[in-house]
Every structure is written in structure tokens, then in C-alpha cells.
Amino acid sequence: MHLKPSTKSKRSCNKLVQSEFDCVIVGAGFVGAALGLGLASCGLKVAVLDHLPPPAQPEHDPRGLALAPSTVSLLSRLQVWPALQAHATPIETVHVTHHNHFGSLRLRHRELGVPALGYVCPAPLLQASLAGALQAAGITVNWSSRLLATHATAAANELHIETSGTRAHWTTALLVGADGIASGVRRLLGIKVDQRDYGQTSIVANIDVDAPRPHTAYERFTTGGPLALLPLGGRRYVAVRTARTEDVAALSALSEDAYLADLNQRFGSCLGAFTQLGTRRTFALVQQRARELHRPRAVLIGNAANTLHPNAAQGLNLGFRDVTALLKVLTTARTNGADLGDALVLAEYASARAPDHRATSRLTDGLARTFGIEHWAVGVLRSTALIALDRVVPLKRALLRQVIGNRK
Image (cartoon, rainbow, N blue to C red; front, side, top):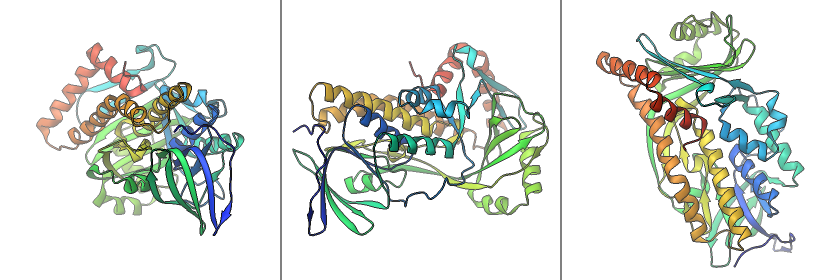
């Protein structure tokens, strides 16, 4: 049975609230919020829930998110991008080097004829813009809520929800797990994952530089892991340093001056001296892939489906491409009068996403493993590969298309 957009009905029976939706999204982060906006714009009745409490104020988050053109296209369709554009810094060139080795690779926007290879946007601004758009669309985020159980039937997916001690029974045509690497939806569905622990942690902080180069992002592969600098405009950059997990405590304990000096030494002098270190935050790095993307009346997207090494800034963009693909499949199903939770509909989504998931996972995992080998002979091969990528146009174009989210 296809659940058409319906009038919300609630009744109290032994403190159990009854509600019916076309789609219930677990996870109110970037990806879940974007999907909710897209589905609501099609006239579907959507509910979003998250286990976290409502944010009292924007969380201090130093991350600058590298948004691919494919992501910007989605945010534009959702009418979120106009509020972000003035605060987003275009990336026109990506400069890739290997510390203490010859060879480099420069990826330029004009080589693909696009306005930019990506845009760096402050993470809190993107989250606030999506939250504001959800509110404007009349979508209430159910904070401090947990999905306790799910049971798919021929007619609907029966969900048991708990919010601040109050339990509810919801029915929905489709349940979407957008609840991150430790997805509770994935656990309830019994979907297993394949995981690789890189033994690395990223340290993220904002810095100032003395000699900025506008609209240029840097990826420098060093002993212990890559160092990326993403421009935020002016002299400000986001520094994303990857280090061995066993070294992170010592690095985090360094004084501001000592940390900046070490960072500067690893990166080099092309941007001058590093100054003004912001708050440092750490994130453990793993690759994780769900073995299945869907079960009856349920589907996984974003980090619940795939978590990647951040060395090519692909993880969030891959999640947004999940949103784009799922919106396409579900809106087509709705237009054709099909059931949103039909197995064939969800299989179509999984089939459409499989090539991108495989290619992007191989790219980030390959970079992490290849540049993690510390041997002089391997270093020579890596440098030779960078030179080849820089000079062999078909290879370079293929890499550029992957980076910007266009695999065609």
C-alpha cells in the first residue's frame, strides 16, 4: 500500500502517541536535513528525529567543509545555497605535494571548465542554514528521540519511538537511516559493516598564514598522514592534520606556538609563517561500508552507509550525492503512484549508488594506504605517480571529475 501525504493524526492511548508519515528520517545532520527538505518540497509528510538534545546555540566547530559542485547544485535546488554563498570560499586550484619528495599535482578548475572545484563553507553555518530551512518548511525535528524498534509489514514500517520519556508508535512508508557511523538504524536492521581502522586521527583547527594564496587548497602528504589546508578567505585557513593515533595526545598537548611551528615545518614555507591557532578538535579515522544499503521499507544514506578517510574531502559530498539519488528515485516512484518503500524502488537506488560508492571508497582508501607506506622506494613511486597524473590529461580529467562529484 502506498502511503500518500496525509493529515497528521495523534491520539493518546496509554501515553502512546500515534502518527503516520510518508518518510521518517533518523539523523538531523547535514545529510538527513537535506533529504528532509527535498522530500517535503515534493509534498511528502516527513518526520526527522535525532538522539541529541536541541542545540542551545551553534556549536563551536572549526571544520571548513569542502563542498563539491554536485553538493552546491543540490543545496541550490533546496534553496539553501543563496544564504551560504557569500560566506563560502571558492577553490580554483588544488595543489598536491609529497613532503621531502619530488613531484607535484595541480588540479585547476579551468581544466574542466567549471567555476570552481569546490567551495569551503564553515560547518556551523551550513548546519544553521539547513536547520533554518527545515523550520521554514514546517518540518519539526524531534530532538532527544530514539528509535527503539522497527517492524516492516506489507503496508508500512511500524516504528517505536521514545522522546524524553514519552513513547510513540509511528507508521511510515519508508525509514531512512542518516544517523552516522554508529547508526542505530543500521543496528536495528541487522546490517553488518566492513571496517578498516587506519590507526590515525585528524586534528582540525583554524590558522592564519602570512602569505595567503587566494582560492587555492593544499594537500601535502607527510610522514604519519596528510596535511590539508582549506582557504576560508583572507589569511584564514582550516588546517586538517592527520597523525598516528598514538601521537595525538602529545600533539594536542603542545603549546600554540609549538604546534604552529611543527605544522609549518611539515607544510613548508609557500604560505609564509603560520599564526593564530584556533581550537583543536580531533576525529578518529576509519573506513566503514555497510554490506547492504536497504532492507524492507528501510534504506541507509551518508555515513550510515559509507564512512571514508577524509584525505580527498569526499565523505560528506558522497552523502549529499546519496541524497540527490534517493530524491530522484523517490520522486519518480511518487509520480508513478508506486510505494516509496517498495523493494524494487530501494533496489533501484542501491544499484544507482553502487558504482560511486565503490569508486570513491577505493580512491580514499588507496590514498590512505599508499601514502602511509614509509619506504624510500615507495616514495619514489608515489612521486612518479603524481607527475604522471599531472601530465597525462585523461588521467587528470578522470581524477578531477571524481573530485567534483561528476563521474560521467
